[in-house]
Image (tube, rainbow, N blue to C red):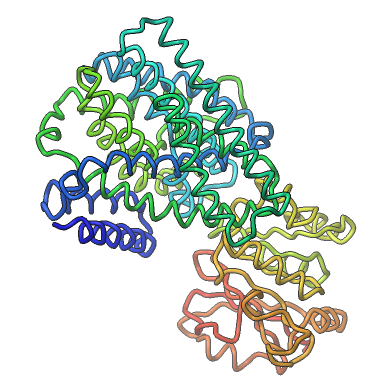
Length: 594
C-alpha cells in the first residue's frame, strides 16, 4: 500500500474509533488497539514498517515528544502542594514501590533480563489521564475517590515517563562500555542538558508570550515548532535527552501563569487526540505475529502478578497511616489502566534496546500492550459495577452547578436536593450564600472563574451548569468557561431582559452565550419578583396514568417549566427545544399562587 493511502487509512480509522468510543461509552484505547490489530497483524491491510520505512521510529519519537509536553503542561505545582496525603503518597512512595515490585515480577515471573525488567516496570508506573479521565466520566464515582485516581494519573504521567527515560538512558549509556561511573555521569549531563534546554526554551517562549512578541494566532503553532526544535536540539547535544527536555519544557510553561494557557491546552488537546489515534493504531499494527507468538505462560503469569499483587500492594503500602478507608484502597488497588504514553514509550525505547543487544528487549512492546489491553478492558468494564458494590458511586448523575446565590436559585436548589440531585450553588458574596448553607445545600464561595476554582475538588464532578446571575454578560463568560469541560450542550444561562434579536449591538453574540433556559420572557428580575409574589416550585412525576401532556395542560397559566429530572437522577434544564416528558421523569415547575 502506498504511504499516502496507508496514512489516510490509519488516521481515518483512528478518529472513527474515537467517535465510536464516545458514542458507545467505552474506552477509546480499546477500539484503537483493536483497529491496529485488525489492520496490521490480523488483516494485513497496512504494515507501517513497510509503508513508512525507516523513518517511522523518528516520527513516533516526535509524536511522543508532543504527548510528553502535554503531560508536563498538565503538571501544576499547586497540585503537588494541595493534593491530599493519599495522592502525595501514591505519586511518591507509590512510584518507587510499583517500580521495585514490577521489576521483581518482570524478572522472576516474566523471565525478562534485569535491564528490560527495570525499563518495563518504569514504563508501567504510568497510569495516564488519557485513559483514566474517560473511565471516570462514565463510572460516576464520588468526588473523593475520583480525585485520587484523577490526580494520580495526571501527576504520575510525567513522573513515570521521567523515570522510564532515566532508566532507558542509563542502560543505553552503560551498554556503550563506559562503565557505571561513565553511565552515571552521562545521566547527570543528560539531566542538565534537558533542564537547561527544555527549561530555558519553555521559559523563553513563555516570556515572548507575555511581552506580546508572538501574535495570538501563532502561539499554538509556535509551541509545536518549539517542542520539535527543543527535542532535536537536545538530541543533538546529548543523545536521547530530547524526551526529558520537552517534558521539562511543559512543566515550566504550565506553571508560568500565562494568559493564553487555556487556549494552548485546548489546541494541545486537539493535536494530542490526533497523535494518540495515529500512534496507537500504528504501534499495534506494527506488532509482528512472530513476536506475539513469543508471549508465553510466564508473561501471562507476570500480567496476573501485576494485576493482583503489584498494584494492590503498591496502594496498600503507600496509604498506610493516611485517611483512606478499605473500600477506597480496594478500588484504587484494582483500577490502574495504562494508556498511550506507556505504549508510545515502549515503541520509542524498544528499538534502541534491541540494537544495544539487551536480551528480551524484543518482548518489551508486546508485554506493554498485553498489560494495556488487559487493564483497559478489565478495569474499564469493572469500575462502574465495583463502585456500586463498594458504595463509592456518586448520587445522581453528576453535580449540577448553579452560579448566582439569589433567593430564587437557593429555593430551586433545595427542591432539586430533595429529588436527590447533587447541587452546588456558587457566589462571590458570603452573605448571599448564608441561606443556602442554613438549608444544607453545598456551596462554593468565591469567583467561579478564578484559578482557585480550577483547583477546587468541589467542581470536578460538574456535569451541568446554569449561570443565573443578574449580569447577562457574566453569565455568558461562565458558560464559555465551562463549555470546554462539560460540553456546549450542558451550559445554560438566563436570557436577556429584552426580546430584541441577536443582531442587537447591546446583546452578547449568540455563539458566545450558553443555551437560554425556560423562555425569552423569563429573566432574572422576573423570577425574583415572582418569588416575592409567593410563586412556588412544584414537582410532578410522569406516570402511565398521568402523562407528560396532561401535566403540562394542567399547569396554571403563566407557569414556568424549570427542569426535568429523570428516574436516574439526571437533570436537564427546560428550554424551547426540550424533548417531551417520559414516564419516570419529574417535572419541576415555578407556578403562581393558586
